[in-house]
Amino acid sequence: MRIRAAAAAELPLLQDIERAAGEAFRPLGMGDIADDEPLPLDVLEGYRRAGRAWVAVDGADHPVAYLLADTVDGAAHIEQVSVHPDAARRGVGRELIDHLAAAAREQGLTALTLTTFTEVPWNAPYYTRLGFRPLAESDPGLTEGLREISRAEATHGLAAWPRVCMRREVTRAPAARPETPRAAAQPHSRPPAPRPAAPPAPQPAP
Image (tube, rainbow, N blue to C red; front, side):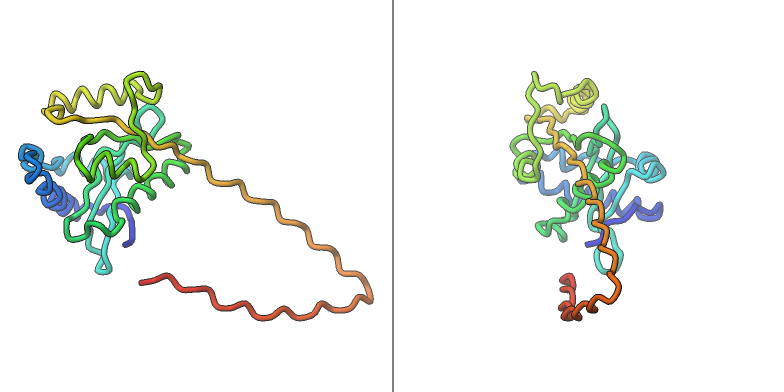
């Protein structure tokens, strides 16, 4: 899968992905979540224009998943991440989140955050495997911005099922090691022996 910025013409496809992904909630008795309409096109366009909407595309450059992000209290907050069922269980969601982590690192943000359902297998348990930790009420990571998001979600009816705020720290990229200066060649020295040719680098799997 390749990850790139979402295009304006693809925004209706993001809505389709969200509707398809939402159907997985129906067998859990969460029909209201399955029936919840995706974000409207003008809101999606706002994310796109701000450079905060990414898609994962297949070999035909067709979006199969997407992620939207906000900046909340110095962290990159995952507003939405959805994977079409046809592309599920292939690590696409992980790739999108890792892509966001790299972007957050470049912007100097400290963490990734999100709110999610506690008991849905592909929600909190999944994010825990990706390195997120739940934020207890007394946790300083539970910022006022996250509390406000939680209150808004409760007003929208999401608090009918247990939810949690989660956080994953953004690690800094290791500093580049300074190159060791090569020793100057000495006059009348013996030329170095030729090095054996390096084997060809392995090509990534298609």
